[in-house]
Image (tube, rainbow, N blue to C red; front, side, top):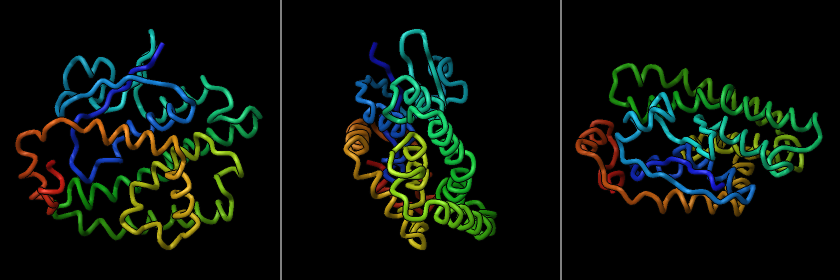
Length: 236
């Protein structure tokens, strides 16, 4: 049975290529699994029908037969576990390390990246954002330095095999890649570039971008202007 995922039919320009359904699409592309998409307009994620699938009113969700999942990390893990050898190694120790890196990406690295997005995008106009940003940047630098040192000259996190741990870690690092925060760590920049060069990633990104056919919700231009963002670029 073909799974169905949920995704937005419109997001501002700065969010395109970042919404977390991309992670699920990428995993499905890596394992060669076709899928359907249920597109939601902005606001649709908060309606009762969607909340029955995702109690926090977010995307993505994943439905296949009687199984309904939310949280992109849980969905990627499920996809990896049900397609043996594609995203999780057969060797038990290597498999455990791949899952370890999945948790590290979401729990040790991503929170600081999202704090940066909060300060520079979502709550940029709040008076505390500028005061908090230096400490957020220090935390990001600590995490990236530690990750860079552990990675060294490896191709992927655990050696030569791309795993679900790499898929999630690269997805997380991409959050700040365009802000230049990876620049002090060339091995991490190269690592992200290798991930983005994978055919499965390109297919997933193209599919997400092609799905943004909806219209901007009322009031979004005013919100973007208040955040100091380019409304012509982001409302399209």
